[in-house]
Image (cartoon, rainbow, N blue to C red; front, side):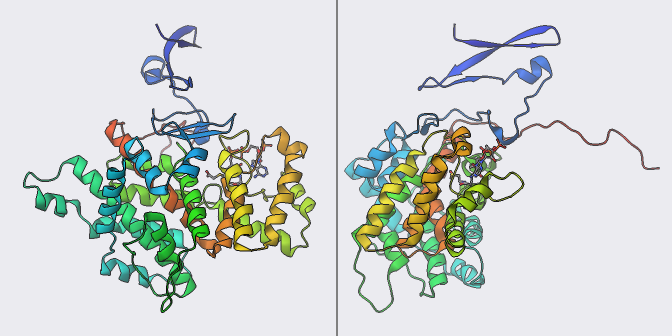
Length: 431
Ligand code: CMC
C-alpha cells in the first residue's frame, strides 16, 4: 500500500493517493478531487501543480541539480556535442556512432528552406524582433512541409506511420530552425542569407551559417564553436517551465509540432523567461552608462514601489545556485579571455552578483543569478547582437520542446484545460 494524503472538508474525510517519482519527489494525485469533493485547487502561476509525469529532465531546485535523462548537464557539456544531447533528450539514450551519423545525415538532407518561406522572411521589416519572426516562420513551416507528402510515404507504399511523421517533423525542425535563426542574425548584420555547409558537424554548421562572410574564406573558430556547444546544451531542456508547458498544452489539443513550438517561442520571448538574457545586457548597459552605481540599482530592485528588478536573478524553482549559471559564469571568463576581449560589463555583472549575494533581501528570498545572468555576456563576445540572445536560447531549447511534446503525445495526456473560480457579477438581466 503506497502513501496517501487526507483532505478534510465539510466534516468529511477524503483520501488521495500519493505518487512518488524516481528521485523520491512526491505529489498528491488529485485526479478524482472534483468528482469526489466538488472542490478544485487554486494555484495561480501553477507554483505547486504538477501537470505531467516525465522521464526527461530532473531538477532539484534546493540543491542546484539539473540532469537530462539521468546525466548531469555539467558532464554532458564536457563530454558531448549539442546534437548528441538533442538525441538523448528526444530518444532517451545517448546515441551510438551509427545513430548520431544517421541523425546528422537526415538533418543534412532536410537542411533547406522553401524559397516562398524565404520571401515571407524577407518581407519582415528589419526592425522586427527576431523572436516574433521565428515564431511566425516556425508556424508557417507546416504549410511548406505537409506531412502527407513525405519522402517516407513515397518510399513506403504502406504510407507513413505516426512514428515516421514524428521522426520527419523532428528532423525538419532540427534542420530548418538553425537556418531561419541564422537568417534573422544575418539580416540584422546586413549579410546575405546563406544555407548549411554539409561538411560541418551540427554546431559547427550553426557557427558557419551565422558568421560566414561573403567573399571570404570561412575559418572555424573553435572557441566560438565550443562556447556555442556549452550554451546550447545548457538551454536544451528545463522541465515544465513557461514555454515548455505552453508547448505541451498547445500540443494537447492535437495542434501539430510546429504550431506548438511556435507558441513556445512566443512564451520564451518574455523577459521573465528567456527574454531575460536580452534584458540583462540592457540593464548592465544602463548601469554602466549611469556611472556604474551598483548600489543604486540594488536598492531599486529591493524597492517594492519601483518596477525595476534585477534581471538574471531569481528563479521559480532554484532556491540555490542555478547550476547552469555556475557553468556559464566560468565559460564567460574563459571565452572573453581566450578571445582577448575586455568587456567592462562583465566586471559590473560580477560586482552586482557579489553585492546581491551578501544582501539580506536577496539572501532571505533565496535569489541567485540564473542562466541568463552571464549568457548574454558570452553571446556578446561571440559577436551576436543583443536582440538575438533569446533566439540562441530557443535554438538550444528546440530538442527539449520536441522531447516534451513527443512524451506528452505518446503518454496520451488529456487536453490541458485548467479550471477557475468565477468572481464576476452573478446572473443579471438587461433592463
Ligand atoms: N529582483 C528583485 N526582487 C526579486 C527578483 C529580482 N530579480 N526576483 C524575485 N524577486 C522577489 C519578488 O519581488 C518577491 O518578493 P516578495 O516575496 O516580497 O513579493 C520574491 O522575490 C519572490 O519572487 P516571485 O516573483 O514571487 O517569484 P516567481 O517564482 O513568481 O518569479 C522570476 C520568478 C524568475 C520570474 C523572478 O525571479 C524574476 O522576475 N526574475 C528576473 C527575471 C529573470 O531573470 N528571468 C529569467 C529566469 S531563468 C530563465 C528561465 O529558465 O526562464
